[in-house]
Length: 406
Image (cartoon, rainbow, N blue to C red; front, top):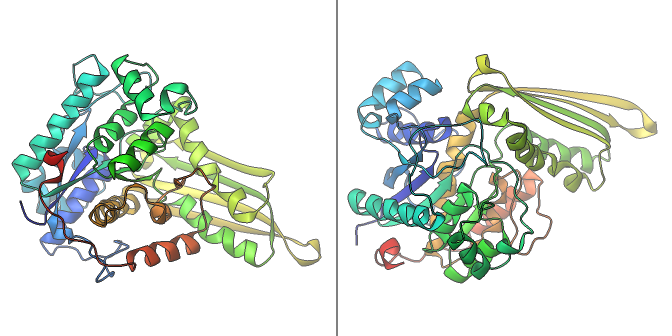
């Protein structure tokens, strides 16, 4: 037994979100920053692993060391970069699984060369085993932070059961995406998996059932960080004050690698789907003029601008407007959620919970439910459910080496 250290295997380790999370945890260990922005830092007694016990590894299509990657993304200050450069410069992502048919605009050269899907899954397993052995971590969690893939028809028969999905892997089915392969690689070993992207990953019936069978906690999808976070805070207040929303116009501009991926219409369709689903569910009626736009604007980098115009009708049919302009830092909002997802999914595993962990829905734009029910989107209620879940009891102690037992 290696002790209470948690390994976080990140898909898209060289991206802005992951490098920010990794640098942030290193800065926290060194006492350079405090826990501001980490939502669960104040939670005591729930059994969450300490931030200092987190160890990172993962995959990326770009093989730059993380110090170079972080400098390219431009999220950290110069003093922060200098403080963590000795550590980040020694960290380099592993070659990633890729498929141009699912993500056209982000193309790197560091990819796994094997052609069969089964061989790719085995290569992912080997990476996880090596990571656990070399870093001497006790448990593992996988988080998908890769670039957004195009939509997939989740109703296809090959996604209906674990057995059909296994057969599809062996047949090199062209509808199986890289995100699905990573999710399968984790879930088939009973490892927790979170999908922080809008891509289809664990959210197909086959993998949801496999997660239930294998006791693998899963959560997703698409991290709720900026505009949608505010939308799920404002909409419940408008609903509770009986203010009728006649229109809601949302636009986003961003210039990082995520924005570049979303510049492809197929990838953008996945993102718009997760961003657009929340409003009608919270309000209880369809907003006829709910418009969501995303534009890639290179000069903005990681500094995203989210602008909303909200038209409402009040008493006596009088019209009013709200205008919200959120000038946010995309990765500064997202990275803490990745860290907290790893800690909470690890807690779920140690509690013996498997399948969809619905109480983690507050972290996502399109929360998963175990039975396909419409999820709760209102942030206040989501937060209440998370706190209730965390207070449900201390985690049971972990015994043995989880991955290598799998």
